[in-house]
Length: 180
Image 1 (tube, helix red, strand yellow):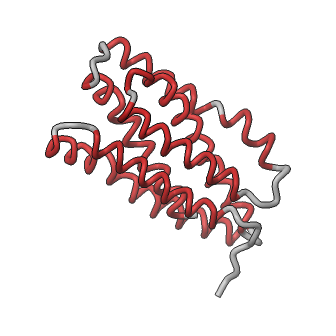
Image 2: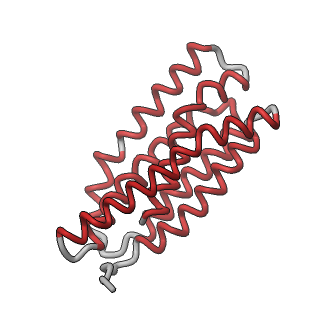
């Protein structure tokens, strides 16, 4: 759960922080880049309306965790390979990332067998996850500066999204955490 949430936050912070610069480097105007960035915010909120309708019907959330994680991977590759379709990739990323965050937070409650355990899981997942996430934007900015393009940072986000899918498959299993 910690790495599922942490990787999601890392790639989200990278995209939210650098998307306008990425789009400007691909020839978008400042107004166009700002508009697409605004769509990202909207798309991130949309899963809050849809995911809960599906989530309560599933005992096992592995499939949805993998699906929304892979949406993030596909969108990062899309921004790299077909940046002229940035609106599509941004909407896909926003939906995938927003759904992943909802899932990650929901997993905390679903996998705990008591309120005390849920609080402990939440504290660990969010503190370690956000610490990991805070490293993303500066690291990807340094990689961009060193390479002169956004290809490596976008590829890294895609790869990390695939890793996130693997952790989502583990966190989405119908199991409770057992204390040792």
